[in-house]
Image 1 (cartoon, helix red, strand yellow):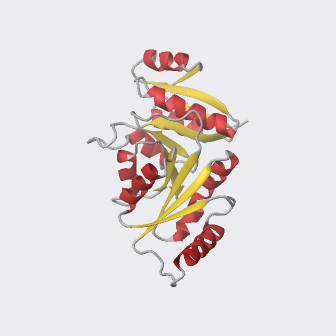
Image 2 (spheres, one colour):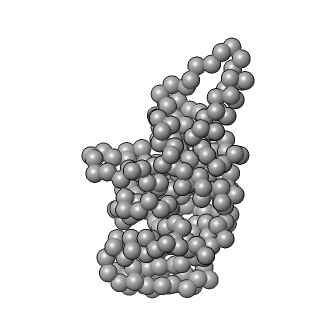
Image 3 (tube, rainbow, N blue to C red):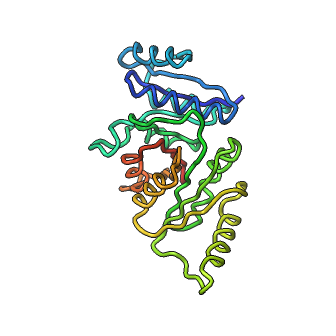
Length: 248
């Protein structure tokens, strides 16, 4: 059975992380594994797990190394953990979440402190900016979403929308069908939302208008300065959990 890891800290932010991890594990028909890497005690983390009806497993050592080792285990399907800083606040998502996302090709779900995850995830928005070639890197997310029967909406943001003939509705539908067939394999019921503008703003606007429960964005496995600028902005501003997908 696949495991979903809920990595909780010793703060009130553990509650939304547990709620999201429980929903993902339930949707996948998997098992929830609640972990806390002890740094400053475990009283709040243990109490949060007990309130959620879960057993807490503690580890000792460096949080990055301990969690990276756990996530690498074959039966782990995803890692869920919290973000430092509030929505729209001065602090971006925490170092731990981004570091782990840069070390694994498995989905890392980052939950904002003020998030209110649903009991069941229904709609996943997959953000795709620029070249459709990046769609290949999101295939694992598509497979994960399809296996959990999530409704998938791909938001493709580009500098310009493809031009169409005078039969706008017909041509737009044809383009969407061709795009999904070519770049979103394994999800025949997926929908395409085409937008033009600033990627992070357009994605966050789509999250609100489409009432998404989860938004997936690419996270580059590089050391280049300024890497993942769109993903960082979405992490800092998103009111819903963000699924980071490895871009190698």
